[in-house]
Every structure is written in structure tokens, then in C-alpha cells.
Image 1 (cartoon, rainbow, N blue to C red):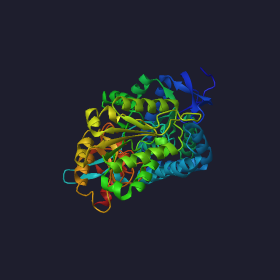
Image 2 (cartoon, rainbow, N blue to C red):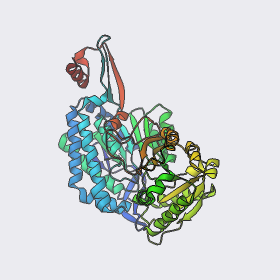
Image 3 (tube, rainbow, N blue to C red):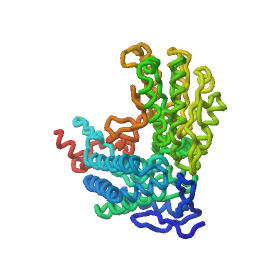
Image 4 (cartoon, rainbow, N blue to C red):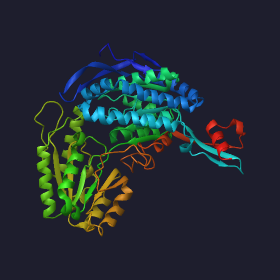
Amino acid sequence: MATDLCPILINGEWRQATAYDSFVAENPATGKPLKVAYPKSEWDDIEAAVVAASEAAVQMQELDPQKIADFLTAYADEIEAHAAEICELASIETGYPVKPRLQDVELPRTTGQLRQAARAAVDPSWRLPTVDQEANIASILEPVGPVVVCGPNNFPLAFNGIAGGDFAAAIAAGNPVIAKAHSSHPGTCRVLAECAQQALTVTGMPKGTVQLFFGIRRADGERLVRDSRVGAAAFTGSRTAGMALKASADSVGKPIYLEMSSVNPVVILPGALEERGDEVLDELVTSALMGTGQFCTNPGIVFLVAGSTTNAFLDRLAARYDEQPCGTLLSKGTQEGLVAGIEALKRAGAEVVCGNRPAAREGYAWSNTLLRVSGERFMADPEVLQTEAFGNATLAVIADDVAQLAALIGCCEGNLTGCIYSAKDGRDDPSYPSVAKALRPLVGRLLNDKMPTGVAVSPAMNHGGPFPATGHPHFTAVGIPAALRRFTRLACYDNVRPERLPDMLRCYMNING
């Protein structure tokens, strides 16, 4: 084990971990290891973080919400001040280009979320204050306590455990965060944590408001999310890891908010293909191969209706996939998972149309892959044929006719998104209701004539959905203020004297008479 390990951030200080092992990240574009070693912590480190977060949670209850808002704003400022360093390191660790992906898109989204969260921190309306004056009962959403946040590999900034949407929501709701760095981009997490620490110092926030560790045993991760001192947890990643954490949290009734797998079905009705097939093709190629397909909203399954137009469309799609360069996959594990997913689809009866071979380049990469399967075969084994091949792979499911589409969609699991393309001249309108009726209950966000990849940071956004896309269909990971409510509890005050009520509730009562 390496002896010169990157320190962890515990209770406002960078200190050496009590490590049982270490790891190094890799540059996925080359497949070569990077130089810095990061610790895998013993429970002693996690215990220290939980103790510090518990103390910070008590202190944060007494803070003016403006102070929390000031921290979030200062943190956004610090990130922008170190944008070049952050984006360069994130590019090395993920293979994503600095421009436009990281510097022009993801970093502004990250700082924008933090500033939106800052504005929400001082707004009591989203906390749903409710007063029954006749009964002298009042209620409001209050912080739940320390929140454990585990971010994914595919968004090193906007969904990072120590800077992304879950982090911003938990802090704005008044909770400290214990963040786990992702092993694919630990250096990026470290620099972000340094920015957070500076913002904490400048704004005088409690030391344990933000803490970071790099690695942990699986058993200790499960122990952490069920710890009695932890208020809630948020996880974005694989279904296997998410379900293990959920089982642990559920065993003691702890809230845990999961974003796991989603294949995001896209239904292309015949009229849309006839009317503007080339336009739909361009949109599908762009969406499916964006970021090498490593988006949780990637269109992994496309439903079409059999016919010569569909066959021609798939031929052109395969040609485009062959023409497009193969992007970098995030890690060796990502490539192995993609290949395993494709193999599972093949075993269930899917036919490879193009791709499914190693890319002719260094690093972690796989050829853009298109598969197809009949509607009859899909209905015979829908669970396996919805295996998530996370990356640049797409499965086309070919229905016998329009009438079969609703039955095929009815076999689908819960997803983050679902999309229906239809003709603008109305020729698909008779088919739309049955398809939409089947799809609507299965997705968090329903789209028309638009690919699902983009997720706007809007108050109206639902980045959630039925299981197994998430652990609970009622909540969203994107969209302020709704995302903040996950990290609160409903607190009721019955016959409590007005001067003893929380400030936000008293202010609401004064404003509303």
C-alpha cells in the first residue's frame, strides 16, 4: 500500500486517513494509471466524519439561512476561480473534453445549481409552512440531519458528491454533507473539496458542514447509510450498488434517494419517420452517442414499427454509427459493463446490426453498437432485453404494427424518461393516445419530439421516475426547490407558544396574519 496518500477532509482539516488500502485513478483515454494515490478508509475515519457532521447539524439549526446562502454563493465563486484547474483535471480523469463539455457546459451548470440553491435557502415557501390557527397547530419542513452523498462517474462536476445537485440541495435545506469521492475522478473531488473548505472559512460556517473521504469497504458504506446519526443518503450509480445501500438504509427506516439504471425508451411512430426521417436520425445519433452514451438519460431502447421505411432508417442509423468516432469510456469497469450488457442482449435474442468490437484506439473505447430485436422476442424476455448497456449502444425493438407498440411499452420497467416522436401533420394522432397512456406511468419525464438527453435545471423538472430508475417515484434529483425537500422532515408544532416556533415559521405567520 502506498504510504504517501492524499489526505481526507474531516471537520475542517485535511488529515491523513486511517487507511486499510489505497487506489489510483486512471486516464481512460490512455488506460494508464495516474500518479496520486488515494486512501480507502477504515471505519475510524468515517466515525470522525459522522461525529463532526452531527455537531455541525446542531450548529446549522441556529444559523441565519442567509449564512448558508452566502456559503453556497462563495463556493460557486471559488469553483469559477479555479475553473481551469478543475476542468483540466476532470478531463484527464474522465476523458471528457475540456471544451465544450466541462468548461462551457458542466461547470456553469454546477455553479448555477449552487446559486439557485443559495436563493432557495432563504426562501421559506418551499418548506410548505402550514398553519391551523383555530387548532393552534403549525408545521414546516426542517433539516433532516447529516446527509451522505455518493456521486456518479459520468458527471464529475454537476452531479459530484461534493459539488453537484444532491450536495447543493442538502446544504440549502440546512444539512451538513459527508461526501464520498468517486474512484474514477478522485482528484477532481479533492480540488472541489478545497474550494468548499475555502468557502466555509470565508463565510464562517461550522467546520463539519462539508467533509470528504475517498474509499470505504462495502460493509462500512452500508453501515454508514444506516447509522442512527445520519439523516439521509443520496446515491447515483449502478443498480447493484444502489440496491445494496437501499437494503441497508431500509432495514432501519433511513431515507435514501437513488438514481440507478434507465434505458429511456424512445417511440418513433411511422408518420414521423415518413415525414422527417433524416431529422429524427440526426437527433437520435447526437443523443445516443453524446458523451459516448454515458448519460443516465441516454436513449437505450428505440421502438419502431416494421416496414421498408424503418428498415431504411436502421440502415442509415448503422452507417452513421460506423462513421462516428468512438468516444472514450469512463473506465475499464465501464467498458466491461458495456460489453457485458451487449452480450446479455445478444443472449436474449438481439441481433448485432453494427459495431460490438474493440475500438481501434488506445484507452477504454468500444465501437458504436446498434442491435435489433423483434417485438415478439422482446415480449418473450423483456427483463433481459432491458439490460442497461451503459455507453454507446442502442437496441431497436421492431413492432409488428402500431397496435403492438402499447403492449411492448407495457413490458418496460420504470425509467427516468420516455419520448414519443410523431408526425407534425397529424397522421400519427390516432396512435398517440394508446402509446402515451402506456408510457406515461413508466417514466418520470415524458417528452414529445425531443430526445431525452438534456436535463434542464428548472423548478418544473423531474429527474426521477419509477423503480428501478430511482428508489422512489415521488422525488426528483434535479429542480430547485423540489430537490431540496428530499433532505427534510415534516416538523409539527401543536399548541407551542409563538415565540418558541422556528424563525421561518414565525415569519410566515406574521406575514400571513
